Image 1 (tube, rainbow, N blue to C red):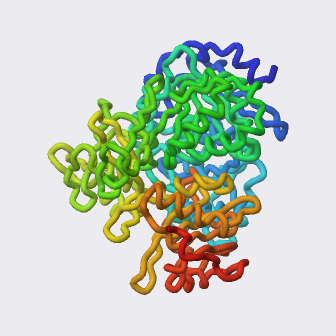
Image 2 (cartoon, rainbow, N blue to C red):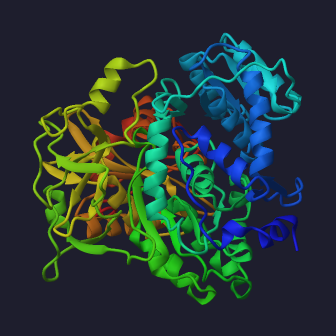
Image 3 (tube, rainbow, N blue to C red):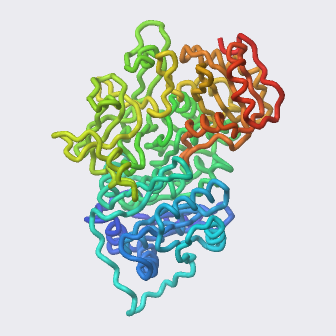
Length: 619
């Protein structure tokens, strides 16, 4: 029996819900747990042989967070940003609560181990000008070197292990933390050169944790979280790390790298520890589904898994069906899936299927969707399955579907922009008052005097009050007056080959010389024969969307950009193709598009010869 399993065996909160903390701010939550159940199991961290497994208890976490807080308050002023640069969640958690205790804004970031991480750290540091940076062990030299090389003024930097535990009489007092003060900055996953820090208040955090508590079964008799989600992303931090401590229930973590190297580790952890709640973006389930044949299903017991949340990127009905089929023999139930919807500007979650409720799927008439409305399919026309991300009913939240051009409300079934008014709506973007007004305070009215949050997402509400997501406004493709949703095109492409990964392809609009068309840019694994598969890709897209593709392009691995949660950055892909920034490994153009599209492709570096193709490629 592992140290984590031994500790869980004595964990009272595993099988009985403790009381919620009477908290005015989120720092009060850990204080309450430490005062009432100091020796209770809080978190376990799986090391998989690279490091020892670690058990964290409320009392120890509280004492360590206090020590870190007393270091923090010797730098800067209350409300200042503090960078937290950690590769994993284990040490990050105590530093995060140290910031909350000290009345500072925590700013989660990753060490600069890759070029993308380096650029992001530099941009975040420039944007928020932190008064202090706290790093994981062995990270400080690299952080300072990268900031110095970029000409960024580096803040004072401390490695967390160098902060002593002792608290003497001369230790500085900690400030009072107001409920509406900012708990942390969650930097959005858009442009690395121009990041926006969402100001998440203590009030927002408590409101959203209350919503999660109702949705994901935290008050049920038995509850345990297992997670591999990154601590620097909102779903990993707010759902996987902070919901357990809010609810006073145990959680077991592993690093994202340990999951990506061996996806079976996630499912074995759910099985070994009897997790009731665990989840991922859609690609996590897809990765496990594709590896199912290599797993020893007889060793898996997924029957305790009651809430398999699926969000942070488009939820694909096919992935859910195939994952449930692949792991049914291990006890997984399809209705354990909990599709959800949210965004950083709303702290995390807006809607989710509640634990115990069935998954709601509707078969939509695709022609009606292309015309901007939902209609159930009648007869044998083209259809697409759409999955609900939850019902709208919630006492502390209002969701409206509006015309994105005017803000006028749309009727049931009509597609429009999703707007939200809620206690979870954050305080705005750090240092960006104009962007804050435009996004967080839109469409003021008598009903919403402070305005609503514009999500930038398209969706509709059906006649039963369920929310469905159509896509992003900025990603919507309009060709010859018809609306096409890129995730529908991408979903059709995924039907062709398991060598194409769900978050490594993008359907984008390309325009040149008054010509326009839709191109699929993708990465693929193994020996991928694009010339052989492109006609099938074209047929799948035509059957699903009645759209003729103008081309299929395979690019070098790692060139399709995604956000920290795995969302495809389609606008970045379109810009890279226009700027000639891709390295093209293969391309397939039908003759009808070759004349105008080939010059666009020729701007890119290429490791292949002339694009292949024929007139039947996408018909």
